[in-house]
Each structure stands twice: as structure tokens, then as C-alpha cells.
Length: 196
Image (cartoon, rainbow, N blue to C red):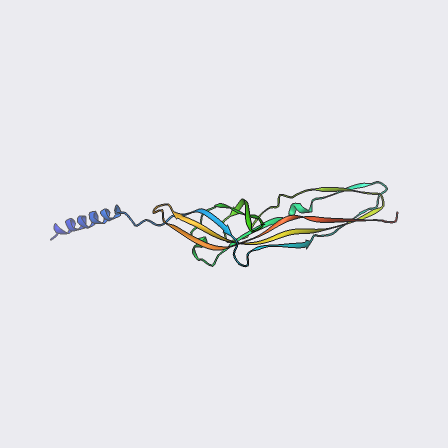
């Protein structure tokens, strides 16, 4: 009996080691392969005018001065993907995939540009319209500068496709992309003399 116990123990260990070499079922590894945009009911673009912060600059010196404004530098476009499909973002989890995002809608056609990350968090990007403007203010003069920001607010339907690297099977998710794109601004300047 004592001789049989080590033999049974060795047999048990060898069979346990053999099971380690057996193939485990493969876990799906999905990658984002494409994204398509379309317009459905309720989708489209709306223009929005927003008052920018006004500026009052006093030149209370006997010399003229130059005022340079670059308010647009701090403005950012916004991009947000939303979906009721649970898999829409779980399948892309861990991926840092940039996708093209809508930039303009003209006559029902969606134009895209270099994109943002496919994520359910708001992404911010430069507007591409940072133009510094300079204006000369005469001696003993006040400049009141006002501007309105023009924005396009867009809603578009999207379908994203994921492909399993192992099996080649595909899954699709549908949702809404919402964006806010800066389109420039209108400026007004008002000058008035101030006392010496």
C-alpha cells in the first residue's frame, strides 16, 4: 500500500500537467474596422450664435497703441458618440482608434474630416480658425470690442463595425454622433474719446 501511494500521486500530477497544455477556448478580440454615417429623421445641422466675451480697452496715453485679439485660440470643436447598444463601446474598450467625424452637412451629404477617438466621452479639438487680429487705438481713446461666435450643431446617425481577429466574425452597433463645429465670428468695434 505504501508503494502504491507514491505511484498514484505521480500519476495524478502527470495528468494535471497534461491538462495545462490543452487549448483553452479563444476569447474574441474585436477591432474597429469601419464607421458609416447617415441622416435619419431628427438628424441634421442647426446654426447657433453665441455672444463672445466683450472687451473694453482704454488707451489713456498720448500715444497710439495696438491691441491684438486672439479669442478664437481658446475655442474647441466638440465630438461625442452615443449609443443605447451595450456593445457599442465595450468592444472598442482599450482601443485608441481615431475615426473620421462629420465636419459639414451640405444638401443631405455628410462630409468628414480627420477624426476623434471613438469613445463615449466628449472629445475636444482645435477649431483650425485661430486668427489673431490687431487694431490701432488712438491716443485717449476707448475701444469696445464685441463679437458673436457662429457654431454648427450637428446630429448624425452612425453604424460602427467590429471584427473578431480570431474568427473573423463581425458585430455592428448603431448610435448618434453629436458635434459642435466653430464656423467663425462677427466682430464689431466701437471707438469713443476719453478725457485726457
